[in-house]
Length: 118
Image 1 (spheres, rainbow, N blue to C red):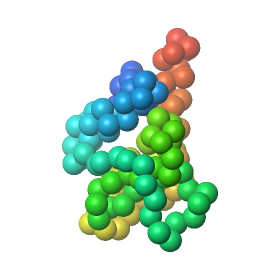
Image 2: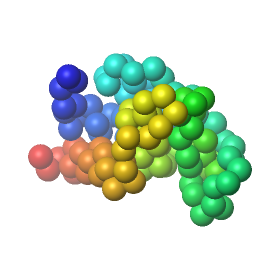
Image 3: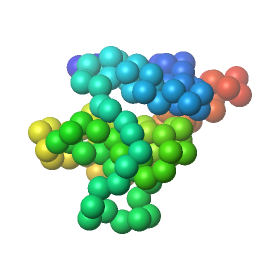
Image 4: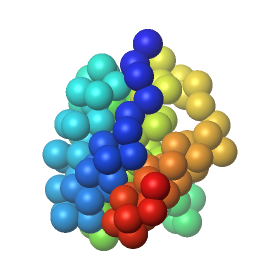
């Protein structure tokens, strides 16, 4: 079992994404959670709504962002990483609610560290 990352770790991941380095953030997350590193790129997958910012494809272990700017959005990257983390084979084992919670936890930690409130 992987220990819960510290707020400083979470804040660092968010800062890395905000610094336009989502690939580095994914490498850091993958090492922490002991999973293969997913790829990330701009692209679309057929059958998915135009309203979707990004999707995770388990078969290719890939995060596809609908627009380049979404690659630098911590919520989007962390949400999709959660799906990568919870994937088994070609099937997701996590819900949207939990992916949102995972991403928001990192963002709250970032806000707390940046503001000095802990």
